[in-house]
Every structure is written in C-alpha cells, then in structure tokens.
Image 1 (cartoon, rainbow, N blue to C red):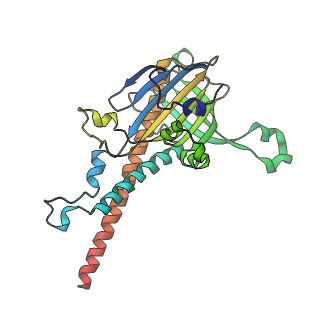
Image 2: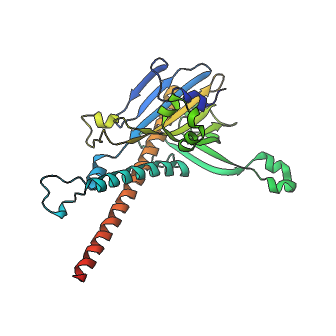
Amino acid sequence: TRSLPLLFMDNDSSSSSLSSGSSFSDDGVTLERVEREGYALIATARKTISLDSDILQQLPRKPTMDDDDDESGAVNEEGYEHSHQEAIQCMHDAVISVFDDRKFSEFIPQESCFLKFRSFLVASEEEERGGEEDDDKQHIIEGAVMAMKSLGDFGLYGIQPLCFSYEEDGTEQNDDEGKGATDDNKRDNMIRCLAFHTVKGGHFDGEIRFSIHESNAPTRESKSKKSKKKTDPSTPGITIAITLAVPDGGRAPPPRLADLMISSLLRSITHSSTIKMRQTIARRLQSKSYRADASGRASEKRH
C-alpha cells in the first residue's frame, strides 16, 4: 500500500472532487472522509487554533490617542510586534510539546467515548533473538496502545496495539528539498507530523497520522457569531489534523466510530495545547511585569 506522506503530498487540505462528505462542529472541528483508490477508509479530523481574545487582552497593545500616560499598558510598534510574535511562538512550542510527549488523550471530552492513548519504548524481537552476542546492536522501537469503548467485539472495549512508523519535521524537510520542493509542498506549510501503524492483535488495520500545519486563514470559530471567544482572523494559527487510513483488504472500523476516535484525540490535543500555551504566556507576562516593577522600585531608590 502507499504511504500517507505520498497520499497527502498533493492534497493534504483535501479536494472537493475527492471528498465524500464533511461536517463541522460548534467547537471548530472539521470531520471529512475522502475516497481514494487503494484505500477502504480515509477519515480526517482537523481544527485550527490561534490566539483568542482572552490571550490578546493580556498582551501589550498599541498606543491610542486616548492614552495620556505610561500606565495605559500600551507599547510602541516594535514592542507590540515583539509581544505578539512571542505569543505565537509559545503557541507553536505548546503544540509541538504535546506531540513530543505523545499526550494525545490527556483531555478526552466527557460526552465522547472513553479513549486512552499511551506510547512506550520496547525492545524489538530481533534483539531478543540475538541474545548476549548482539548486546552492542540493541534495537529499541516505539510502540503504543489505544483503548477505546465500542472498538472491541460485540461493542465492548477494544485494545489496539500500534507501532511507530515515522516522524517528519517540516522545517528540516523544506531546507533539504530546497529548489526541488513542489508548489503543493510549499502550500502545505507542515511543521511536524508523525504516524503509527497497526500491528497484529488489534481490531482494525492501517495507519494513524498526526500533523501540525501553519495556517493564516481565519478559523471557523472566528467566523461564528454565536462564539463568545472570537479569534483575530489576522492572527496566524496552527491547524492540527489527525487522519486514519485503512488500505483495501484491511479491517476498517465503522465510519462513525472512526470519526469519534480521531475527533476525540483531536479535541484532547487542542485542549492540552491551549492550556500549555496560556500557562507559558501567563508565566512570561508575569515575569516581565515583576522585572519591570523591580526596575521601577530600584530607580525610585536611586533618585
């Protein structure tokens, strides 16, 4: 079967001619199924996160005509741009940290299914067969296990063993490809992606792909009139996507269960990333405020 990197190289953002259906939820999650030759099921869930109004209100703002003193909280243009770029970097670091730590099921919504995802390092079978003579050639691989309600037989809980497939860094990949990068790859703006494939003893066959992409488009949340916390459409964001692909001849979970699986993982990842981002920004702002107060008190004492 073809690998997911080739599958998404020419169409990671999906094409309407290949899409067999998509849906949106109130929290900005997009669910989509794509029909491709050689695949029994391709289901994708994606969501874009950015700096919402709560975070933007905490950042320094540009001065206005109404600001008569230095206590307004406003900064010059350079300070304003620096603070926002720093907040955007915190957002990037938060999402990448969740991926690096494999915290994919830390916050599964209560109204959703029960689902847990854990990764771990294991010794490969080749090392076990090699014995003491191959101690210098130890081969450690990353494995994972996912437990989910209704995934098992007769609608019971099911355990799905997984094995790490690959991990790619979009920045390094673009630097290596250089002039050879295609227009589709340039538009892709991938930051990081990693994938796990199924192994024997599970309930479905295929690969689960987690990816992070740059996004400058306004999120669905920013367009929603009902949303209480609107995002700034001009603020760069990050799109997180999870795809489950099952090749022809493989066992595929029911489409609704597949949608529930990837959307639950996606909601957990975005929630974990948002919490980590807000904590990091709050700590940095508090540290800057403390340093500014300490500098002000020292200045008063000198005078």
